Amino acid sequence: MGYTDQRFNVNLSILFTELPLLERPAAAAAAGFTAVELWWPWIETPTPDRSELDALKKALDDAGTQLVGLNFYAGQLPGPDRGALSVPGEESDRFRANIDVAADFAASVGCKALNALYGNRVDGVDPAAQDELALENLALAARAADRIGAILLIEALNKPESPRYPLVSAPAAIEVVDKVNAATGLGNAKFLLDLYHLSMNGEDLHEVIEKYTDRTGHVQIADNPGRGAPGTGDLDLAGLLDRLRKAGYEGWVGLEYKAGDRPSAESFEWLPRPQRAAN
Image (cartoon, rainbow, N blue to C red; front, side, top):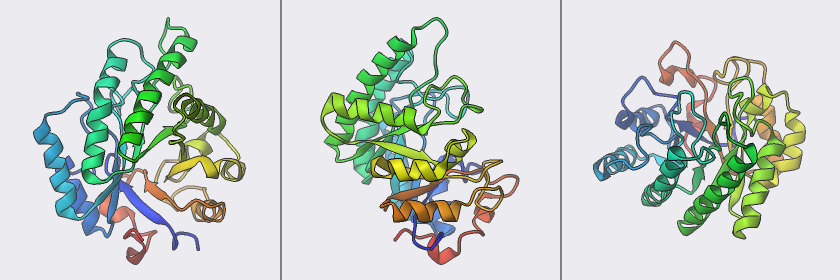
């Protein structure tokens, strides 16, 4: 078991970043992977020109890589922001402008999971008002995801690295998942279970897996400490993925780790090449 029975995909927003965006799908394919995921690639705009969307679709298609996860517009990520949907004013407006753009692009490449990062707390704004805005925007996003047959993902981050982000535990993210599903009646909001973030929060990972696998729509991994490849830290990632599988999880496992000082293609030695192509 361990890594042998998983469906891995590579996050092209944290790996292969030494290459231009349009070269990354081919690089992932050359390393043996057939599935990839992305943060929203155009951090400056929620509504990129059609030609840019078409060029990314062509790069994915030409490489033979399946996009299995895409973030909605999330502000400056990487950078100081952790999402836009709960930030009143311009950022919330930008998130709304992005919803159908992201959903339509996902539909065009067969992507079935859209991740909506919640956004940081804002000085001088009532947290309850931010949460109300968040629920409105997440309901819109859930409906757009449903329109294309996709799920909406809600992610917990970690407090040390994202101190202003309010969803820094599995229960906090699950609470939002439940609120969105109650608001829409669609049931397509799911938990994005990131083992690195939850371990950084000091959560009991076995308990999280036991309690929340049935509401988990996507999994991401990196070792801790360091957010490096499996085997560079202290997490028993193979054992944790085994537990997830035994608890009923059959979805994707996104590799969202940092390659360090070496080229990304050299950071996969922990995973034998025959196991990199998605089953």
